[in-house]
Image (cartoon, rainbow, N blue to C red):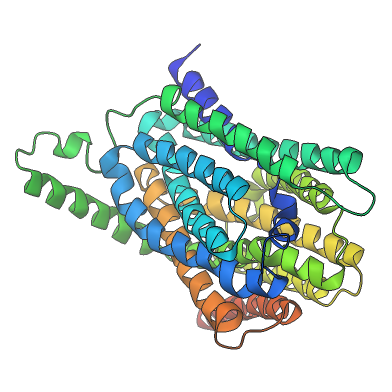
Length: 416
């Protein structure tokens, strides 16, 4: 087996294992079984902790990932996952759940090391195939997790009560295997893109090597974001990622506000994962042919933003859980389709060595927006109810679409 395929298998297996978290589709319902924990407490005081923790830690981890050469952070990712689900088996109070959310921020932040590892460990000609393998493994892990979770709940629940603890225990076992895999089966990296690259390997002093590395980072950053096409797609990427991450983080709060009987959550997650994967594959096949012109790009950005806004508005105002499920899935499919096109268009217009930098920075900007959004309407500020929060998310999609519409009209007028 060729070396890049071995790396691809190791990363794909890790991605599959880390996504096998059976409790997640029912996490909010599970949290409400803890002492003094209500839906309101989860919404205002627990989930926001994860958002703030993720944003703060991502900045630190983003800066040290390249210097530490990726694998140590992937190990931290695995160990933090074990900690999350292990602590969840032990604690029964709000403080314990808040500690879990802090560690969950570590888990999410360390994923930047997992996704950027590819660019340091594999040759450039293998970037695309290894990326496709790892992305597919992550989606497969999510689908497997959701399917197994729903089957367990369906066949082993009581008539009047669902015991989610068994799902948590199975999740913990899978995450222990994930941590073990990260330690023993993920290959170490000898070189990295910036701090341990050929350009600075002959620099004698540590101070000079750091200076050279940051100069290289700055050059890649300037070159990438000076491209108007890259900048526009990055704006869409940051806002779309932010809103989708916020929606998936709080959607169970909305479902419980509509109906307390959330038996089919895992089925919804499974359907979303499968249909999103199909949408991503379709996007990967057709995106080359119709996005050559800047005007076409702007029209697509407008339509994708407005479409996601419409789906989320109908999900937020749904009177039945089934209707909300359907529009949530449609929004997820639209996101999968659009983010694939977006990521590909960014990658096409930047240097290959800049992929990790650009996508990492876009993710950080997305989390900054998400943090501001959480402060403004969830944990403090307006403290909107679940329905109000999701209407705001739909309005933000409309605002994003309006921004691109104004840009399109300005460009059109200039070309006249």
